[in-house]
Image 1 (cartoon, rainbow, N blue to C red):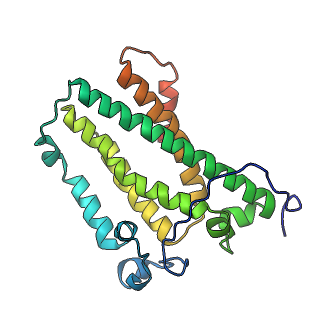
Image 2 (image 1 turned 90 degrees about the vertical axis):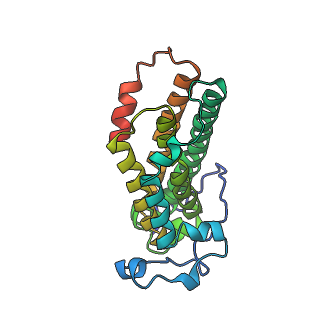
Length: 231
């Protein structure tokens, strides 16, 4: 039964088309599908996307990240140079804008779906209307892939000759792995993970951008942002 009489929302959203499987069905519905009988024959034709869906692709990428610190230290990076600071600023503002786009579009899609189909169909998505018809699945895939680019956050600290915390490394690794499982299974819990995480990242990377271009600027809400990130 629909909610609110199938009242459509006029707000336009961007619904990119991304297919994480050839038949648009989940690549995995059981643990066995992921680690034993992975359906390689149903992977998308896009080699880049397929790499980040294949178990060995994910494993190799995560392992590289975990052992990359010595490699990154060897790169001829001048952390105090203007060029480096500008690159970091571009990195931060780019992720802030990207996260804002994901947060806005996924939030509107979720609200539209909720008003049309109700809470159960939005949270559980039993018929795949949220993932496929509404276009949320594409944003989940896009946001998942971006988790690997966020490894640069750790490398920036290494290039600054700082020690990345265990929490940061664990967070980047764990989020990428969990979102991989979510995308493979087209899990509806990503409704909250993508939308809320993208919103927090919009604020977080905006803060990082401000501190990069103006290190002395004091932002009183910073401590609340930290709490929001952890929560």
